[in-house]
Image 1: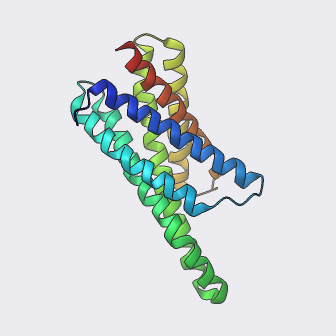
Image 2: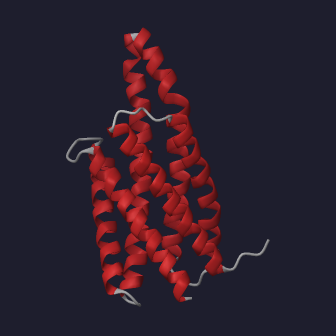
Image 3: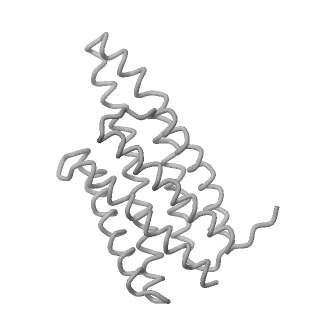
Length: 199
């Protein structure tokens, strides 16, 4: 199966859009206290991120420019697979054990903190990719889309850097880091789609 560089980038953009939809839907259901199936959502995200890592890795060696941006997308995908895997397989067992043995509460908290550390790193990298492709877009065909994408990318990088450095909910609510990363991902996907259309 032969994939051109433009088709590969298009697939990456659609995968990013699908991930934005799954994350936004999960958040809306959670806020509405509907209790969505974490296994379903996180399992689907893990699958999408696994596929994304392959396509982003291919783009990193296929394309002539922005290798650091493609690398950021690829490694953010790997980090996200790790993060959702921890959430889907370890959160519930540790929570159940900690409810029976209070001494294991700290261990359960450490698992959650570890998962969020990886989550913030992945969102930081997606913000970095948004910055790189936003600047490229700004210097090319669309200053508005490029400037907006780059700006949101910087915000996502800053918010997630704060959360990585000082811990969850230390100086910024965890939701700020997550939401800025999702918005950066959305704008990054739109940037990539416009690149393929122009090509």
